[in-house]
Image (cartoon, rainbow, N blue to C red; front, side, top):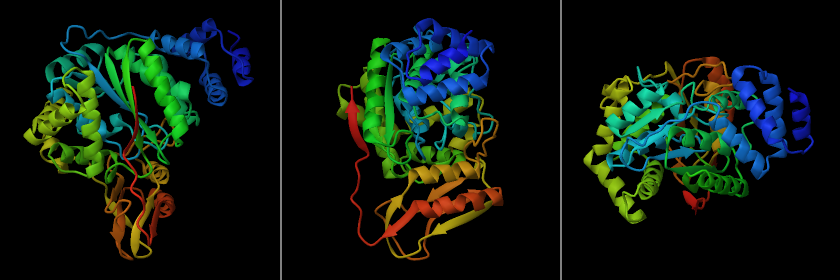
Length: 434
């Protein structure tokens, strides 16, 4: 295989032939194309992008690298949700149970931490015993039994993406619209979803911080999904500061449970309700967004969403007692804090710096071989626009390794800014593309 020639062609701005794309991805899964060549090709794609034809062929080859699930025996339109990755974004964990409780099946195939952003699978695996590695039969069984499933891709479902996903995280090749779009959509199509709500993050904590690039990604997802038979709605949402007050794996599970109990931070709840309404609309379970909003709020108020999460945790081997007693989740041995250096108002909580600090603490991975520490994280006592006095803690940091805390502390100090004036409040949902 002339893989070096194809890498050079892409590096120099050329287009890869269809047979080259298929050969490379088939060879990667079979072990014939080594990781160093894949890494070089990924970097060339980051620099040069992909044409519409290349992207369609690339995604098709990823889907065909393994098995495809068929969910036709499960009644209703199957609707998934996916986020491009944020800091403190635990919405999937409270959203899926609420949508399922409203009668729309949710086959959610989630990912792990990527770059400085957290991963839903890592958060779920902080629940003792919870299994995310479900084979297709188990995936279908849990979905049929509970109306939802929260799992990773099996080894035979889009194995090309499984390989590339880990490699991108370790080779600084995450920030690419074609690679992000094909990674997301290949899994959603292969899992058998009928529709998808995309949460495309914008701001310092996003992979694509600029709104123009985020909009391009959203439009790519909507159009590429539509051409492949997957109805996609994409929302651009703010990620300048962390979502909610918890950043970390076990701590974000605790916050998701708070939302299902009717509490939790206002921004996490608002985004959960809006995305849920969009999912119910796609699932033909709501007449319009207002109706969808009412149904999601009712599922919170009645406890139906909380009960659905409990059933899903048990069905996937986890300890369902954590839903009623989150203190059973892992906790770190030590705590530190970042205090306000002056009195005033929180003017900035830089989500990108905070995400990198959480990664240094062990909440994410510096290399693909790293293990994630479920117990570490950052709890924010104040958010942007809230008043603080000098010496008052802005956040508390949970850690197990003092060396990691020493490395993360300067980033957290730099991320938190206090000013005299009150900053303008930014909207949470910036745009919707259909």
